[in-house]
Length: 115
Image (cartoon, rainbow, N blue to C red):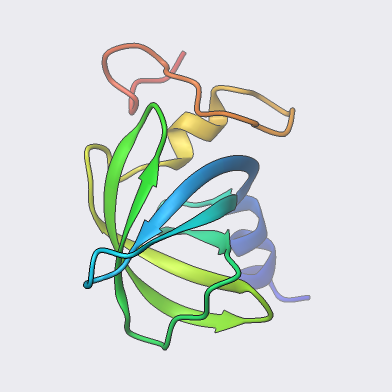
């Protein structure tokens, strides 16, 4: 394993959040957010989306995030976050510490602020 692989793994936090993906035609699909990083998130969804598809990811208690599909396969997709109320979803996952985050944890008024 290379240093880049180690760094990528360290940058991702496991979560199990429930959300909804909304496509350009405004159809919605239930999904689970499985991990988050500074740039995006791993999502599982029964609906398949082609590479480059622009979607809205709605996460309860956090809001809506615009994203684009960067990779997909076997009911999983990598969604690069383009815009949203907080571009750093990872800070909400970090609120749960070493435990698997089952819901976003608010860290106060500024999610970028460290504890």
